[in-house]
Length: 212
Length: 212
DNA sequence: TAGATTGTTAATCGATTAACAATC
DNA sequence: TAGATTGTTAATCGATTAACAATC
Image (tube, rainbow over all chains, first blue to last red; front, side):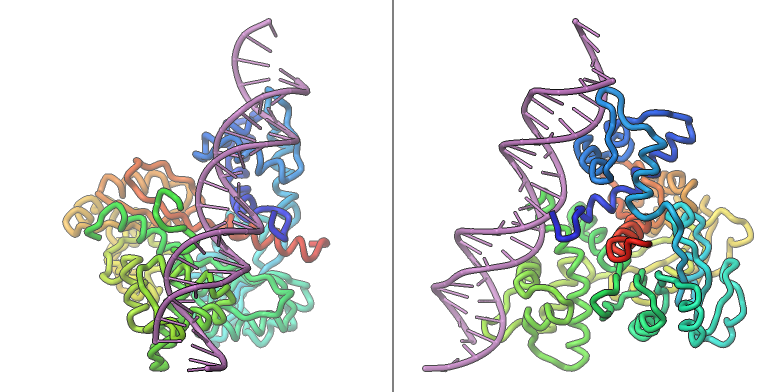
């Protein structure tokens, strides 16, 4: 086990289970087995069972898991049972895309405001969220006790934006920029690494089509 | 070793090395050691050396690697030495963000066109790329021998869009939707899984702030 | 009872890390 | 020569997978 208590790959798979479960709930299914979840996601049943066990839930042999309980167990395990407020830093098209992403509600994420340094954008809306000037970040984040910032600024100002967010009291940075951020030890950074993702795609394609 | 020949984590780290190397090249540094790269990225030197070895390059003991050679070795290894044309399916704000992402040039990715089914968008531009109707996809992809499609449609039409892309001859799908895609065995799918990423962030935050 | 599934314990697999001789 | 670094071989670590008794 890692120092963290739960394998990171397990944490990453849990949301996909949630999606299957919500589908099952919609179809009014009371029980679901690890096997059924595994088939839906092309995983091994044993892996699903091991992952689910990490959330603390226990199933009924021969039957499976209570769908509703399992949903609650996963949401609670991930900290998605009550929503967390977040801000978007960078009101460009990526910020706009994320501000407009309805799915975040299910993930316990509530975007309350956006910030930018472009005077032309201040006061405008990003999918219904007001865009503030970054100078107001410290005040607003402090008063609202916001813990999460979504970084969608250009890469060359990402570090500055991160510094500002940390000064404002942000504890978690969801980093959509290509920049590797330097932050104090107690700050959590989760990077959505497009270059890494594209590298995997490229390499797999290359293997299949040596001409590529 | 996996069936694939190279550890996926290694492939994912290589682009970050590239960034450090391009910085070093900009500063006209001729050599760089694995140790220096490791420090810049907060990794272990041995891991960097192991990763670099996978690209086939060999360094000089006591000195390091030739920066220019190393850049070429990584780019070539990832298939980024010559660009691949790609299309964007879904001309929403996420598609717009990706179409406008200048960084892709470095990653060997060239976005040539966008597709949408909204008549109001057809003929317009997405960051300089013309938006075509999805009915034209088969013709255009076929004639231009495009291998990669970037999926930025709403989740509920992602499978349809993927089917269409596959019919058109696309070999690799870069999936930005929350939908798990079902595709023929020879099609590569790389998913940018926001829910998985957010789950990791949430869980790490929860560990640090049990109140959260 | 027969069939399905869970959850535990053990085995395997793959990636990371350590140790160190060889080299510049 | 002394110090730094590579690249190889071995050890460790962590995650996945297998096997199977217990349960419904």
